[in-house]
Structures are given as C-alpha cells and as structure tokens.
Image (cartoon, rainbow, N blue to C red; front, side, top):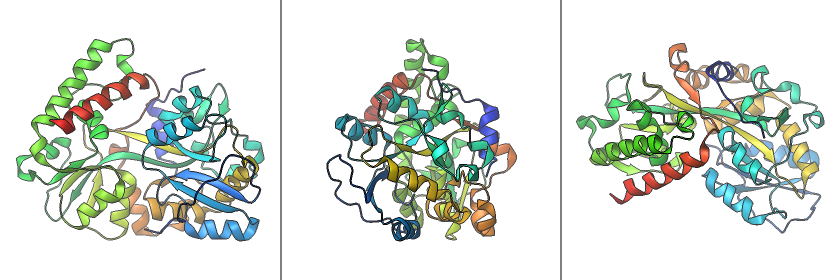
Length: 366
C-alpha cells in the first residue's frame, strides 16, 4: 500500500478551495440488504435535517444516523463487526484512512457512479488524503484545523499559543488533551505529528514526555478538559473559559452565531484535517450509499448548510455564493495564518497514537 503523503503545497491548495438537529439515531439492524434504508455513522451536525427529509421524499430511502464523537470509537465499532457491518457509510479523517484500510473496513469509491462528482471544488477531486495507489477511498466532505479560540471581551489579540499558559487566565482555559498535546509539542519545537520520528522511538518518547510534563506543570490553567465540540461551545457561551484549543468548526459556529469569539492560527502553527464520507466494505446498502453521496453533491446550498451547521469549510464548489458575509468571515483566515496549517499525516500513526494515548492518560491522572 502506498503511503499518503501530504505536503504544504497540497495543504494550501485545499484550504484555499473553497445548530440544526440531526435525525434521532435509530437502532441499526443486522447486516443484510434493506433496500429502503441507509445507515450512516457521522458527527453531530454534519448532515442537514432538510437534506435528510428531501432525500427520503425523493428516493423513499430512510437515513438512519448513528452519531460518533471520536475516530477511534468509530474504528473499533466497525472492526468489531468484521465482514458483516451494520453501517453503510462512515466519516473518516484523511490521516486515519490507512488504519481503516489495513483492516479492510472501507471500499474503493467508484466516482464514476456519482454524476455530480464534478461539483466538488477542483482542489478536492484528487485529495491526497483519500488517494492510495491511484484509487480514491472517500468523498471529501469538510475541512478544518486546530485553532486558538479566545473571548475578545476578556483577552487581548495574540499571535502565540503562549496565552494558553498565561497566569492571567489560570482556571480559564480548556482543550482536548490528545489534540493539544500535539500542538504543545509543536509549541516546544518538536514534531507533534511524529512524521520525523519514524524509526526513532527514543527521540519520539522524549519529545512526548517533555510535552506531557509541560502540560502537567500548567494543569492549574485548565478549567476542564473537554471531548466534544458542543462542550467547548457551551463553556464559551457561559464564559466559563476565555481561551481554548478547539476544532475550527465549533469555533466558527460561535462566530456565525454572533458570540465575541476569535479563531486564529498562532505563529507556532497548527494541524489541519479533512473529513470524508466512506462507503463501508460489504456495506449492506451500497447502492443507497451512492445515491446518498450523489445527492449531497447536487447543490452548493447543501454544502452551505453543512457549513452553517458544523462550522467547517466545505469541499463543494460554489458554496461561498450561498453563504452570508458573516458565515464566510467565520471560516476565512488571513493568508499568513493559512500558511501555518499543516495537514495531519498518516505516516507513523501507530507510534503516535500509542504515545499520545499513554501521555493523555498520565496527564489526566496527574
């Protein structure tokens, strides 16, 4: 299997391309063709309810949504089902694609079955995160990054992650430990994505331990470690925190809703990611999956509604024309900040996951 390699040029090309409720998750039946249903595992607010309703009216197919909030949980659930999956589509980030492929969990995407494939923004049609040995393994959906978020009423403009460790905001910060650990490594001058540590386990462990100890030392800064985007949104709304690390989607949604929040990429840089919808290997309703993916691509307004709900940037062409000025401003960064975003790489993921997971547990327990 050829590795997925993502360089800065592809990062810039892709980023420059372009609180509704989901259906109540239904019980997913055993894996066999069900003809009039489609089982989708995805994140909250990724599929607009208006699209779900229209798709059912047009096709007679019922979309059953199973919500997830973590790539690892999604992978474990699918792996446990083996060759008899109970879901048809999963939502994978590009840097985790190899993990799913190694276990034969997702199928090649036949873009020829999608008459609306041309409606993708040009930069995403051959997204390197989703291409292996010349084959595509998913429909690019939404792009995002790990950003610095601050309440502009209580903080001054800053260009550094150092604000997360400023004594002035003791007890007023928050982050996802596993995500912020990688950013902290970058802040300290080491490789938070572990690409340069391939076959250098001792060096990787030293860098991980340094970041772990740094976060433990600054643990009094943290009001609460969080897991889901909705949690950090609520903390900002309640003014429980003034600064945080957060995914760009939830932060941009706060800006769209008029909250006094700024989203930025500090001078030390950050990491970006690409979500995709992927057809599961042996999906019981694969034909319905392709109908669903093609329908998603049918109109820029569908992509725009996904942006409004999730806050992430759309991969669909023409979406900007369907967004308001405030919605566009919430997801647009100055060029110099875009230059600071590096897409997560799949290289050396096993080592990274192992060390990050262990350090995360140690930080929580400290």
